[in-house]
Length: 74
Image 1: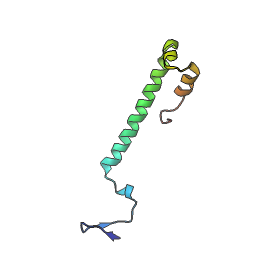
Image 2: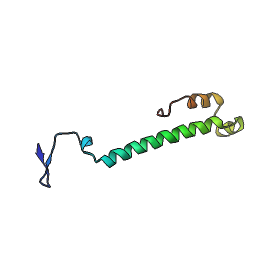
Image 3: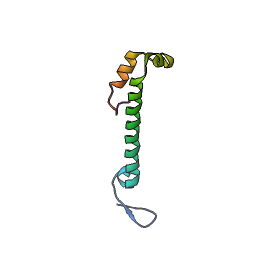
Image 4: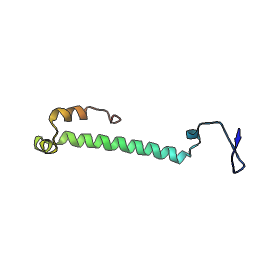
């Protein structure tokens, strides 16, 4: 064991294991929020008509390819 400046002892565990639970939970919340946003934007993309797709420069094949991905896939 190593000692730290405040007089306590630090274990030999990796730094990420010592991170506060709130920080770990916030990372998971952020990841889940990203997944929800990705899924929502893909659903919206799938609902666009041909005129709207032409406006943004995407063809129906690209829409199909993007909307077939799972929510965790970038």
